[in-house]
Amino acid sequence: MTRSAETVSAVGVIDPVPSRQGITTARRLPTIDALEVADGERTADPLRVAVVAPPWLELPPAAYGGVESMCSDLVNALVQRGVEVTLLAPGRHGTAAAFQSTGPVADPRLMGQALPEVVQAAQLPELLADLAVDVVHDNTLAGPLITASNELPAVVTAHGPVCGGLGGYYRTLSTRASLVALSRAQRESLPTARWAATVPNGVRPERFPFRAAKGDYAVFLGRISPDKGPVWAIDAARAAGIPLVMAAKCREDVELAYFEHAVAPRLGGDVEWIGEVGGRRKVELLAGARCLLFPIDWEEPFGLVMIEAMACGTPVVALRRGAVPEVVGNGRTGWVCDRPEELPAALLRAHELDPRVCRATVEDRFSDTALAAGYERVYRRAAATGERLAASRPAS
Image (tube, rainbow, N blue to C red):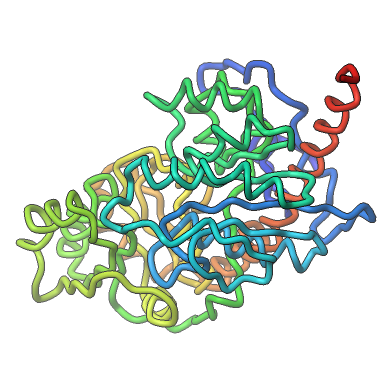
């Protein structure tokens, strides 16, 4: 097999690439070669990992919750690989990992605010002191302020944007922890960070039953926000003459205000609003759709719902932003458009795509086993680096 910047192996780690400006990552830790470890390969040495999840939802989440869904699938797949995992998360849990509660679930009215994450982060030193682990994997924004300063090796996944005001934060974190990106697009948005690896998100295919026969409707699934493009989705579906079902999170004040101003006036007839969905209802909605509409208006670092749809055999019609071109194979698992005006024609061509190819792509590249294999490799590299650093310190 020939390696290239485009290569994604079964373990889900994309080979490092230079940025669009030709700037390579500064002070990069030894990057993880995706081709060194085949999917399913095991190492005899035991590995103990603490995985920190955000304070907003119990795991697995009942409805919307991209980070929480990823964490839930990850810890379950890691346990299947023989990794000893302790999940640090709020409330109760339903995963296969050992569990340490960080307290009650945060008030949903505070979602997006810093205080709940800071409160959870402040508890981490005490919680981690009681655990015998080799590596801490933090999936929060504030938590790495603690975990990256701990003596334990830390792995930090950047689940959101890493540029703008957060650029300096992640640049600094990358000198203290193994910083993991979700996509090449994400790491290229901060080329001066010390990226340790790129591990695309994954889902457990068994949670998303394959369906070859599709309905005539398109589906918009996510949250109500201008950057998710709900208005573009409505306009595109109407222009194509295709019914649209909108199932989206709309809880926060800013989401409710945008819904009332921009979305609600456009509903009715061929556009049905059903609100936030999860579990079996979400899966049925995705599996029966002719396609998922994903007309984002920001540089989204991944977009978990795309691979959830593809796992059901449902293609994706999306705009070329963020990680979309890395996830969606144009003409194979969806249609990638450059402008919103191109979306209606793409919707009308969704039936040309083979649902079996969509499913196979998830099984090969974006499964929970690929996700776990990729992160296990990151953990082992971080643990080995931490051991070398500890051995080099002078005795007190």
